[in-house]
Image 1 (cartoon, rainbow, N blue to C red):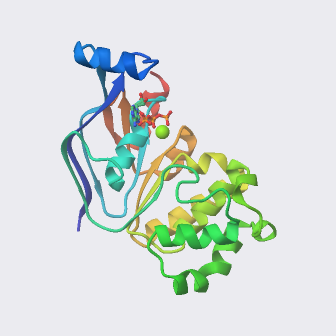
Image 2: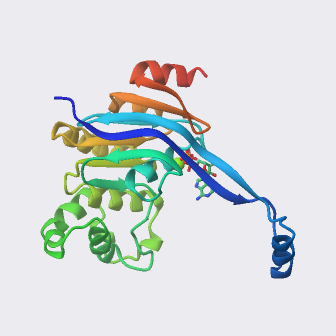
Length: 243
Ligand SMILES: Nc1ncnc2c1ncn2[C@@H]1O[C@H](COP(=O)(O)OP(=O)(O)OP(=O)(O)O)[C@@H](O)[C@H]1O
Ligand SMILES: [Mg+2]
């Protein structure tokens, strides 16, 4: 049975950006009074519609600034779209910004608990799965090091290990696989495939087209905030590479 877990209908996202540098409060008020405080609206997403079915691995590709992270944040509920509608059915583990949900001054051990709570796990649950999280991350030697001293790959390992310890109904992965070394990437890909078998829906953003081609059933290509193409992985990736 086909079951839609994510549906985006005409989603648009506009950001307000101050057009000019204002150097003082006085200048700010003068401009405010004169009505000259200019904000330009920047449209990061316009009229984006797509749906993702249960158990799919859905890829999103596009150049820098095309709106990929923005749509992931909207799906995760971190941002509200300016217009349009997003419907999500199921629990989400968002792996969006490297280190979001981590405190750099705390050790890896402490961050496992902190990040676990952010993801809604109980203390008991984290304790029960602690060794498994550490084993998957291969960071046992660094458990008592503050993570501000971690490399970006190490932070990614820890984040991925924590977020995938439960099988979320929806896993969102933004670029994070790319910073792990190739051995860890293989491990993550295997875990994603296992989750898929178990019915987890996965959304992946990656600049590695090979990775998208290996993992995804369908791909959406965003170009300047608009859907350029949605379809089978091979046809979208071929055209994306030949643009
Ligand atoms: N909070 C914000 N305020 C203003 N502009 C923003 C904000 N967040 C994103 N943008 C703008 O929206 C556009 C899309 O950003 P987004 O992060 O979604 O791109 P992306 O496709 O993920 O790019 P990348 O491949 O570099 O990760 C960019 O031009 C960005 O500057
Ligand atoms: Mg991004």
